[in-house]
Image (cartoon, rainbow, N blue to C red; front, side, top):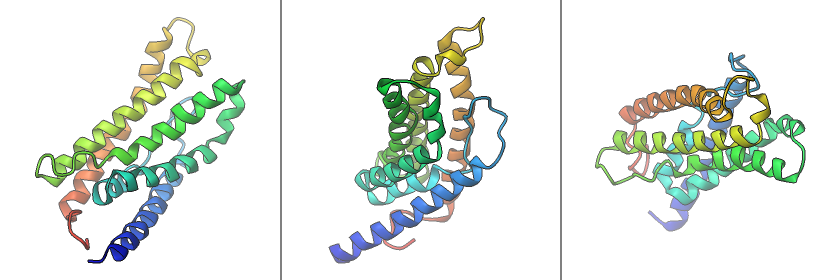
Length: 191
């Protein structure tokens, strides 16, 4: 397979997976989840980006996840109206969007480590979900601390609030990665 064809295939597959991920997040955003002040989980929205990273490498995964992160930031732009100052804007931009969703591009970091595609995909998925949770937790204890109920520590509130939807997101991601891994061999040239 020529280098040109491989690069074209990688770009084309990545574009399709970015579009699929955006569509899955958009459908999920339309569902009224019972979380106050935003938050919520997607219906397998992270899975396509993790697959790009696993199939085409972390560099391509990070490019795909950055595209998703920018889209998510545009869709959540109203959140910037709740904060004041450049430092707060930067924390929201990076902790809630660019790093939080951008880390999904690291999902393929375990490729070739376990000799089992499902184990590699699921482990990568769990790690990036944890990184994403940490980003939202940090944002919760810094920028969104004012939403903490009176008789609760800010760190506990951020842990419970962000942990609740990120735990669901992680479970859904693991289910999705396990299901697609049972059907497709992502190490082959054509799937």
